[in-house]
Length: 182
Image (cartoon, rainbow, N blue to C red; front, side, top):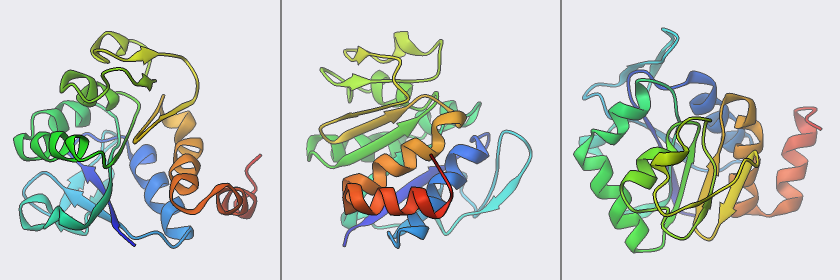
C-alpha cells in the first residue's frame, strides 16, 4: 500500500494534525509525519512540541498515496511558503494523486490552482482563497482526489473520510465505533 504523508510546520493546529495521525494508525494505514522546519521537532500553534518521523528534504515521496495538510496559524502560512512542498502538491495534483487539507490549509491548495472546479470547504474567512472551487459549509468535502474539511471540530470526520477513501466505508465505521464516535 502506498504511504500517506502529513506535513507539519511550526504553528500547525495540533488536534488537526495528530487526530489524523492517530486515526489512520488505528486503521493500520501507513502515515508519516513530515517536518517542513528543517528539523524533526515541530511546535504547534498552542506550544505543543511534536517529534516528526522525517524531515522534508530527506524524504523520497515517489510512494505517496496521499498528501495531507493540517491547518492552524501560522502553520498554514508556513506550509504555503515552503517551495518544495508547494511543488510536491502541484506535481501530485497533476498526477491525480490524493490530497487532503483541513481548516485554513485548503487555502494553500486554492492559491496554487489545485481546487479548480472542485467542491471544497475551509475554516470560515478563508473562502476567498479557495480559487476556482465550489465552496460549501459541509464538515467535509470529498471531490475526486481532493478531501477538505473545516477545522478542529471536524478532525475526526476528516480522518474517517480519509480512512474510507483507502479502506472503505465499513472500516471507517468500525474505527468510528471503536472510539465511541457517533
